[in-house]
Length: 191
Image 1 (tube, one colour):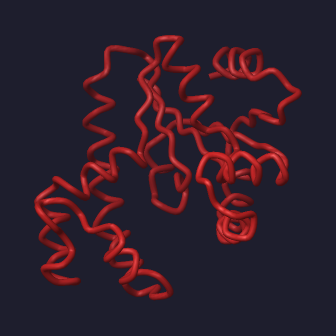
Image 2 (tube, one colour):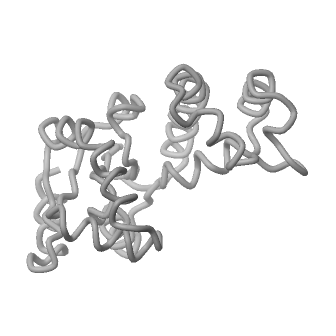
Image 3 (cartoon, one colour):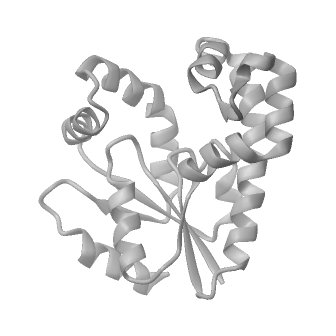
């Protein structure tokens, strides 16, 4: 079995590529969705976060996301702590999930594939790329956020995205002009 990572910056179209792969019958692990579920339900994560940030971390059994965001916003030590708890558990969960899949290829979609360490568990990486203005507009439409807020998020990710782009094996252009499916089929043939 080969494990293939899908990464790219905000608004690049990672989820579009993942949906196409799912439609083609390939299993795709959405690391963001799973991380949210695991942060709600995994006992080790719950215990570590509650120990660190107190009883307000969970309300009625669910993660208090605004509260946690306040704890890690502009506090690199707290952010590093949360990542050190969550990322290894997501990695282990992905590996268990991958082993349970009946296909020769499995995929994992992650915006932070490299910075989370997930890249160590995949055989190849596909980078989904799009021009800055297109990414900005997509993210504004999706998140109902201002251009300034989205630009700040894009700029925050710029170093990680440059690294991911140069360390990926394949690139798919999602620029609203180049067809994605032929690029994806060609990539699959090369994998």
